[in-house]
Length: 301
Image 1 (tube, rainbow, N blue to C red):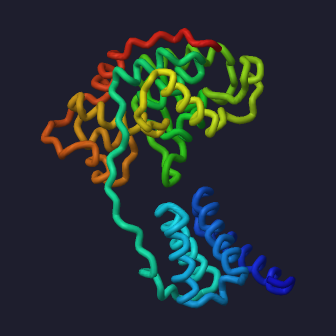
Image 2: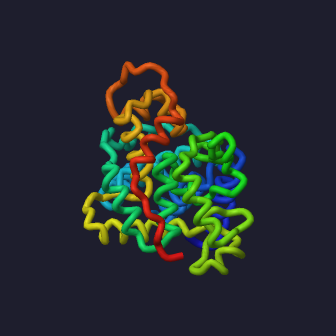
Image 3: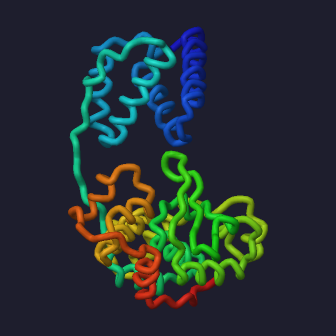
């Protein structure tokens, strides 16, 4: 593109980003939807408001061959948003690309495997992080962002703030997890974060951010390898394990949905068939399940 075209694109791109913020989109959505516009612009070296239906077909044909279906889908959604909210045009090519519907099952670790992972982890911060994530069914970011004020030891609840969909929820706090969090917090005594960033207790005490997301993911992968566990599990797998293990412990499906913050019961139902169990004492059952873990917090601080 020449200078004039580039300036035109930059104005459109900024309108696109502004529209995303006005619509209240999550930061991750803003990132991928903006990237979709940059990617197609670079592909043709043309401003996207000049593209035809045939251009879009050519682009998506190439994208399918070089990127994941997840990327194809987000690019399609991002460009559709760009046409509607930035160009004020109809998107007549919604079906130009339709990723296949895939129904995959999550990777599940047994409770004995999770116990082994925790006990063989060398660093205390990762021991407690894994236990906390698993025992409350949290997403990676939800655990990272836990603060001291989020822990209610009187009601034995943890306040998860701005989870998926920017929604808060209360989850059951097992006694074993509370004890582990207190044990670890005493090593750094950060006034805000439960999992502050830093390689030493001194650095963690004065940290301005929680632990690094990618660092936790890399550490978890290394921990699995050290435990000789070959399942392709990630920190998010701990959340799925929590749901499956609760169901195996006869916790009612509706209670699991509430604990995990699933908007739709179909999301929870992926773990198993619908159960006929009656309402039960969820908090007691979760504590009973977690008490089976023979955890020894002896990792290095």
